[in-house]
Length: 531
Image 1 (tube, helix red, strand yellow):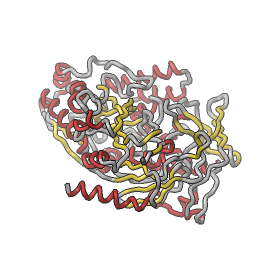
Image 2 (cartoon, rainbow, N blue to C red):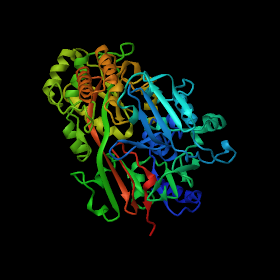
Image 3 (cartoon, rainbow, N blue to C red):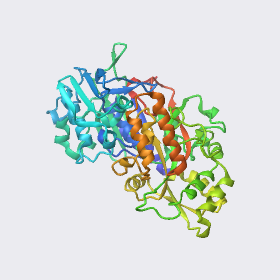
Image 4 (tube, rainbow, N blue to C red):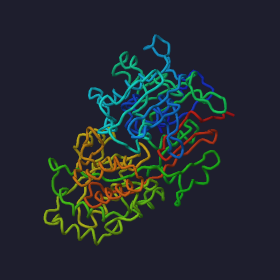
């Protein structure tokens, strides 16, 4: 109760930092924000904030289709390799000390700088991988102030959608030169909101950008005056703050709060419906267990594919969804590509996903029972219940499993460096093409320089992946995706658990908040009725 009182006091005290704004949208970032630099927008918490502060060439609509943003139009040449963007001439960076307390018009040179910065090894951006083996040498060119051209090595169907990623937002060179590494705490963007204040571990305040370039029905966006982001790590405390009206949005359902919010069928508890509305939609997020299989570091029993398959067959995903998530999500009976993307397979190549007898049979082939050493699954506290469930299921077939609980920031660093043998993870789609999921197993994307955290390396897989990058026929490309996903199922560098749904609770005074299957709120359209 003391912690809850302190949390509420912090949020109420910091309302003075918002300069008595008329309409303030408040939400909580439970994992914390590590950077407001788009080059480091690799976590959902960072992405949510960056999305309010910056813009790119294109943006995705609710159906995940690219539409204009700073680029008002574009054309692709007949080879499919040259993209020419015509930029708006009314987009300004936020006022900043780096411009002498003024602002500046965005030009195509800013995009050349921003994109080259992403791939510069000195930047060490975790997003550099998105341009790997795609961009031609000197592939970013400013033709004139409002014409920006990108040349890629070969036709690549998802490329336009890829440019909607936060990594591809425009930043000013003056801001990077002025703030240097501190740019992460002093962002200068073009977005609907601009940076005002960041008190570490307390809150982040963004103010309305009065010269934002987008309009809706002839009214300049955004409608809100400010955004207040708190950093309450305790999910139960955050829910209490939400129910008391201190927060306008509550995102995600953990085991600690699910029964307070949802009934056994995954619907909103009746007593909450008067002041709260619930929005549920498919979320392109695959939840899984990752296995380090790099021959240089892997140890027994993970070096045996039969053992990895035994782990997969031992887990009852339907029971997991029903009892641990109140029916939220879809049990994974296919591959790594989630439901909702072309290439998703609805049936496990090797039979039903849960099969204790097949698990025991695979375990015999692995010779694990001859030397049953304990395995360790690493997770955060939020997923402890899920890992306890997995621990019990593995124990039922004779696998000794221990659980290692660590902070999310530590797990993120350790998995990037390849130091975890077995860990719970998730992959949230960056852009709407299954290639984004399959890139997690391409050998040239080994972490820490890419998203291949398992260090999976298969020549046949790489050949199919590279072939898919140049395939322009959608049907053929989808077939290649399915072949790759079958290899992942066969070799089992990951154990896919479920395909997610996003659930968010909203204060009923909020209207116009746009969501999509990426679960990234677009606050520029949101309104708040203070009556």
